[in-house]
Each structure stands twice: as structure tokens, then as C-alpha cells.
Image (tube, rainbow, N blue to C red; front, side):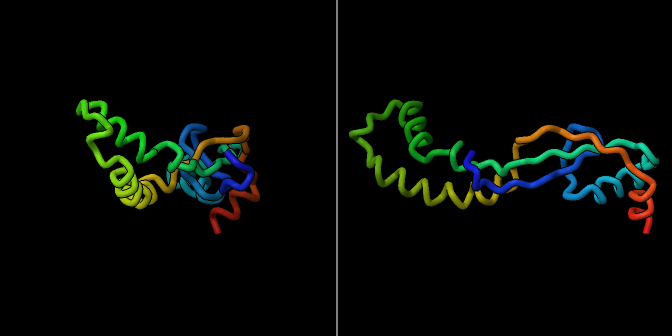
Length: 122
């Protein structure tokens, strides 16, 4: 990915599911689960937003349909079909795949401190 890709830090209370936008949010969930104590562990990792358009090409999809249906490209308005599908595909990708990220950093372990606990319980 380019250096201009959107990067965010996400947090996890189990080192596998990074769904919290802040350390405080992760600790609030730990408290709700009855697992918030001094030295309890939560994790963070830097993530980059996936550029999902790179995974879905209208031309690739049209090619796949032509291949599966055994239709010769010369008997088909290929350019128009790709253009129309591209117009449908971009909004669909934005709607259904806009919030997908991949971990691009090292997962860091954090221990809850007494100060953290005071902030969460305020």
C-alpha cells in the first residue's frame, strides 16, 4: 500500500479481534466483562485501510462471466459492459467493504494501570 493510505490504531481485549477505537473503549469492555484489574492486558496495532477496489475489477468479473458462459468477447460489447459494471461496482464496494483494515504493525501488549482504571471508572 502507498504511504498515503489511511492508518488507524485499533485495540483488542483478546489479541485477535481489534474492534475498539481507543484504549479506553477496550478497557470499558473489559470492565463490563468483569475483567478489568491492574495489570490486565489489552493490545493495540496499527492498521491500514484496505483499498478494496484493487481486489474487485469490473474487467475481471466480466472476463469471468464470459469464460464461465463460454461466450466469445467479439460477440459481446465488452467495453460498454465493463464501464456499466464499474459504475455499479464502485458504490457497492464503498457500501459493503469500506471499513476493512489490515494490520501493518507489530501487535503491542499493554497492561492496565491504576490511573487507567480511575479514568475508565469516572
